[in-house]
Image (cartoon, rainbow over all chains, first blue to last red; front, side, top):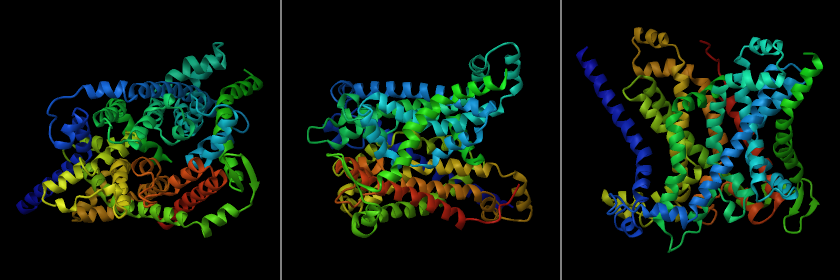
Length: 281
Length: 294
């Protein structure tokens, strides 16, 4: 028995070492990035490992103003906010109808939306590009946001329909009895009750759009319209001898920071949401 | 409220979603199958119907296509042999209520929520020939002679990008399998412990069969993810050096938006779609076995 116990303790200790090691593999590069974002270029080359010789907060100022990160950041905030507003509004309206209203063709329409999740972004990317150009929606935010909303509806409607189905229909019927219109019932009774679903869909759409790269790359060409991922990728790809490394690192910290904050706030919903869909489906 | 009002409400609620989804998602996806049949050069916007010529060229006249396919396969194989065992191991360990399990889970999943562009940039610096921490690490432990240009080296570039992709996605698979393992009722483990099973035996005879359906799902996700690799490669290497990391989708992007071969690129998109569908169905079929209900 004693042998067994010490064997188990040893196994636990080894497991802990493995877990700590992999945690370091995940965390260390990001920690290194934080430190690098506070170093001067010279410090970076002479001392890639250590703590900055002198904290160069000026890197963040340079990133924000000179490298254009400030502009890209504001662009990203705008595109993400507007896209999310329309995705959640339009998505929840459709999901409500599909979950709670009875009409012919309901199942077919629901299947039409959810099966969209099977299609890879790149399958339709050339026709989408040609379509946006023809409509004068290429290289502007109307086109980018329309594409983001359209590409996000499948998943959003899938998630929200699930939430609306769980809500008791009696509440809606009571509202109708009291003389509310179908629209008022949706806005004033059902939508507030579906808040957990809106939060779940909102989180995943936030990450999806804040981090999105390929569609933005195809739809946006003008330098002043670049979103943060586009701007960073560009800074990285055109780097040359005069590249201000500190500013580039600071820019990377700025693109990761909002994700980190949202992740820390909603960690429970994220881990649950990530798997709930997969496990049920 | 009568039937007609109900129908009208349904139309009002559904119209915006159906319009946007129909025009900017369904239409392009459907058009892809049509555009793929044309020789369509961007500059002049001239298009000429060529039937299945684009597909024939892809399969028989374009060595780069096969090169890309082999790189995606490499992505899939290396990811499979590392991610599946590692995620099963980490998920089983974290499910066993080891101290700090929630914190570890939170750390492991984090790379998955940062922008793929940021991940690509971060790892480009890790592999950087002059100030990258990989070379610094090698020098630090006396293996300085192995320090190299990593992403610039045809021999290492693809594996370097694959390693980055594994770092990025491992957490997702851990969390997926962890949820599966946690949903196994504890009395299965109690029963196997009573029968004298060690932890390896109970892993083989309880965990593995009961988490099989989730494992199947993980394999299908792996196929989808590795055939859809784009941003990581495009930002880290742009497919280089000399096509050594080019994948199906970076090649599609290059054909469409660098060389303006819209028809050819779209044919490639159709091939990738069919590949993903076919491979996922095949994986589902191959991993089919009696599901254990509990």
